[in-house]
Length: 411
Image 1 (cartoon, helix red, strand yellow):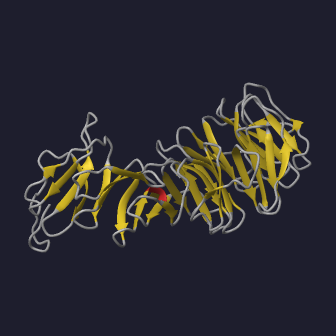
Image 2: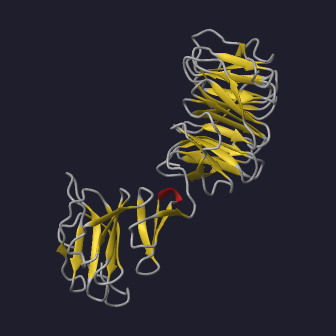
Image 3: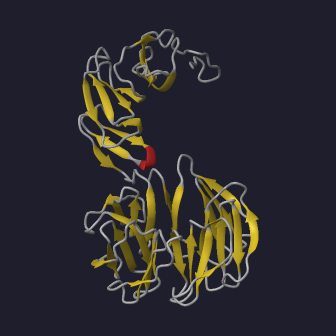
């Protein structure tokens, strides 16, 4: 669209038969460029030039079968195109040829910002910022760096220092509350797949049947062997520095009372698949059996378990020794006030299957894929739905009643 009246009126100035346009730049009052992406069937990315203030557009042939996200000229001769696959195409002859191809540090960069004829930033998804001072020939990361892959677990020792695990068994750390993250190469013995942080204690399980443990907020880590298991453990928890549990498929349940030095087999029959566990204290604990879609409760530290006789159980959360919650595969939310002796259905999320997390008897969250709901009355009503498009929230962590983090897909 073009205006000659300061934006009062606009007329269509599109190139003929263009498919999808993403960015425009004008060198002066008459010479400009437009870039975009090709149509269906693998057509080349689109590039057009005008020398008559947009009355006509000349299509430029390109060999790139990708998407051009932005274009900018610093003068009549020198320009740059940004595509979605980390590449920048540079011309020094006014667009007659784009022979020079360089690479940014990050994928899916969306826009340029130039501060002079040589220096520019690119910005993109998940807060990524890259910087060049030589017209795109070399790039460095700048600004807040984030995690590009799916985050499965997250936890913090304090307001600044935390850890995050990805589905690719990579461990990231932050020292500024999560505003930027670095691949952690100081904690040895990965690949890690489960993480728990409680106070100054932290635990990491790796794929080699080992556990890393810290009791001083990550300053020092100690390596322990854990019982070998045919499949990876699905969940684990340390109730305190001495007592901990591991659970997994085929009824696997292990317990330690000496901080992870030795483990006792507390496994149940193989027709159980345990996906999550939570202990309130050394005696009272709950486990989800996803195979039978039910909830099991122990009151003697895992020696015996009682079936809560609930159907379609999906997830659980225990606030204290009496108050607990269960979500079901048909989107119901159940609540107990007597440690699981009786249950009351308190809400129906209507085909929005998820899990809950509470910080006190009234305030909590229900998370279902990209949607997060908030309650102020113990789960009776839910409001303030937040949505995170193109992602799915996998984990939530609260350091105290005020500071919390959500983590999920695409960093």
